[in-house]
Length: 356
Image (cartoon, rainbow, N blue to C red; front, top):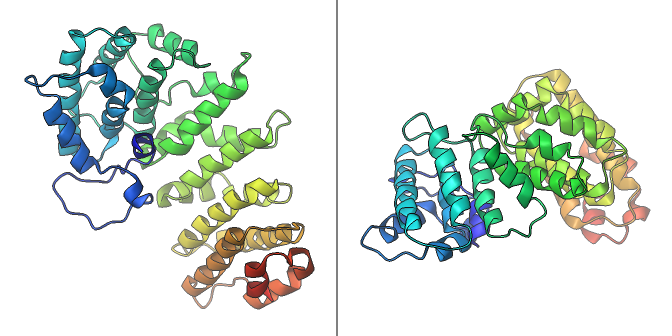
């Protein structure tokens, strides 16, 4: 549960406010407003702290992830937690102590501003570093340790190791590429992450690599996961639509994507449909209409379709049309049954009842 709390950390959570917001993972993650003060008091100089357990239970990784919080007061408490932990760490001995001290030294030399807010993707990278220190048998361990020893600081304004890992030429290139894509998938949470991705040409690289012969199905799924995470944020999605031709790219890949990719594509389409109605751009609306038609035609070729995919598409169509202005053209849901051949999806009762 601690690792899930790190991956799904709510960066908008504030320390001194009562927020009724229901986060994506709900009760399945820890609340930083509760957990960070607990760490602060538990790491006091009068307390006996077992640093090895604090690291192995992912508590240190959670503190590092909390450095991406938008709440300045919460970040200040986290910085104090890290300072207290370092004081306890110096006087103890365990197997990854030197690596942690090196990381703390590099981090302190990299932070030039008091109470600095880290980009969530960089904070998650630091959290994953701590987890790697406890697993020296990992395939990526040597690459990470070389990265830490390469320079006397950690670059906090760029995505660490994106180029090296994504374009890796080592024997473990698939694992390294999957590792950095997993970091992007869970790390993109704020607009500052989008700025870092733009600097590193992340989206252009992923869109170009998707159709490459070197890209297998597992990597394609990870790439779609990255875009699914990005499409949840309004500002990032709008930039993808207007600056990268995202809808046109989706129209190309939807024709030949695997069955496993349909679920992710339906989620991306749903995110676009819910946010696209807030803009008044006829070109984007027409491109989205075309994407919907192509996606429904793609469903026609599937013998079995998960009900969740059908529900995503149908709910997107309904909400999309309800939110459109009267003068904006869109798909007519009644015409869908002329596109979808119900005989090929007869096994799916939910979809059959919706389309027929």
